[in-house]
Image (cartoon, rainbow, N blue to C red; front, side, top):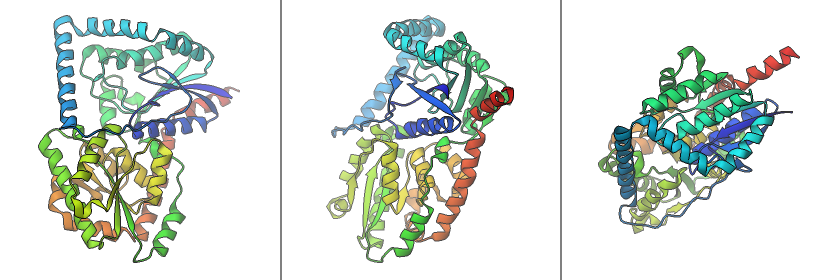
Amino acid sequence: MKKAVLVSFFKSNNLGDLALSSAIEHLISDKGYNIIKYDFPSMTRIQDNTIKTPVYVQESNPAGKKSILRTMLRKIRKALFFLFGEVKIVRLWYYFENLLNFEKRKVINQDMKTTDILVIGGGNMVMDIIPSWPIIFKYYCLLAKKYKKDVYIVYIGAGPINYKQSKEIYSQMFKQAKKITVRDPLSREVCAELISNRHILETIDPVFSLPVNLLEYRISNIKVQKEDSKLKIGICILGISCFNTQHIYESYVEGLLKLIKRLSLLLSGKVEFILFSTETTDYIAVYELKNKLGSAFLKDASIIHLNQVDEVISLFKELNFLIGGRMHSLIFAQICLLPFIGVVWQSKIKGFGYVTKSNHRIYEIGSLNMNIDLICDEIIESLSNLELIRDMSETNKVLNKKVQEGNVVQAYINEIKGIL
């Protein structure tokens, strides 16, 4: 069996990143490769990809403090680049990275010697908000070049890339790659500035290919659903860091509170709201929203912490509907045939609506507040809509095919078979 070193985000605090890594692992493994996993930023060899979701203690505006700290760090970094130049600062960063990761690099060297290919994919690793990432990316690629291994850059998200030095690094490494695939139009635009557009294949998020088949289960559940049974509605809550201003965040929270209260009344209290997020830092907002519900509705809401991709799928199997937040909460809903609505907090949510043919269920934050009754009617109608479930299932077949077309490692195996 051939071997592949897979570099992805296996130690992320974001379940979307973990799902991406898991999906890519499955796609490559299905083509006959034994996978050796490395976490991209930490450069550590991985045995399993799990996280522990921290329970945040309530503070006065903790998310706001974190946002201010991030802004200060960005300003300091820009000042250093301006004073000393991008090249010097990045090279200095690289020097310290080498010192800190010397032992880890010895292990990677050994694995790269014996592997057949290097696959880098998932997450948003083609960017330089974290200045060391272009350097880390370069290290993996140069190591593959040293041992004459083919490099595949697959299902990546890209941008923003702010500094000239970073663009030069990514451009050089992209030219080394045998194949490059991106998972959305915006990432293609960013990558097209680094290498000719003809070298880039645009596909979709590989999480759409995770093997989840719940069609018969969903249809059966709807058919046997009793009028007096308690419904479960999941709400994936977005943290303040997802929004440009405090005002937009507060408007979003206000809309969610209205939805919860209105749905509870319309469903005569026969509903339980499961509050969660697929990103650990959002749990501050999860607790804040629950505390704002008030005593009359507090009994209808509970918080759940999710640590693994399997736990998300298990939860979504139990839910009757999802009010989506993070992008991958919506993708999980789609593959689990769980009816949903989404909230636009970044442009890629609209992209999701386009590829899943669910634009009519994706709402701007402003319209969320103004259309509470309309949205509640749509949610209640979706709870027993068998045709919607069947349509989602057919869409999943198309999405899975699109993901498979982006699995460029397939072409590599065919080439080897042709030679043999």
